Image (cartoon, rainbow, N blue to C red; front, side, top):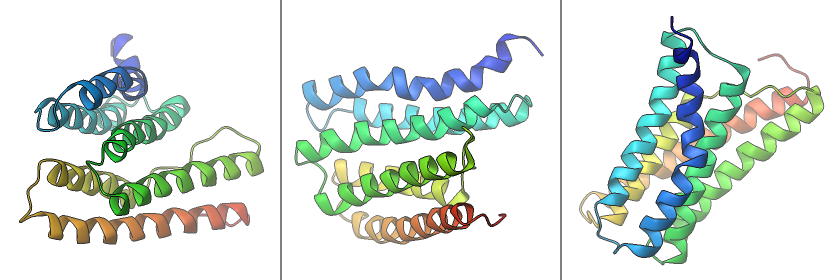
Length: 182
């Protein structure tokens, strides 16, 4: 394996934290709501989220840094998409606030567990979180591009995966904070 390969997954994770802020700022504040760039940025964020984990596992270059950088990149990217859409009244509060709340719970729970365990080790990603991120992203795009006929279905799916993911992560944090093995 080339030396470069071992850095690609982490570079993809970091791209969501470093490259996306200025791109999303430009898209959200300087382009009209209907502009296709928002869709492309969302798809690129989703692709990098999938690709970093896929290649890290495929090339056997999983690292503690990557385990932290990936979910942090997800949370930053999500906030950078949701907050401007809320401020522009493009996304309804009932959809945006729970998304930010879920991510805040995951960040705070992870920090509490790391503090208790006295080590900077990431809580492993849960499938419920990956599915929730995907469904929430698609729902946001469905709403953003005004696909009225599809929105009720995706709104219900978002509520279901939101509750599932929040419950799943909360259970993990509770068990870890109370010294139970998972």
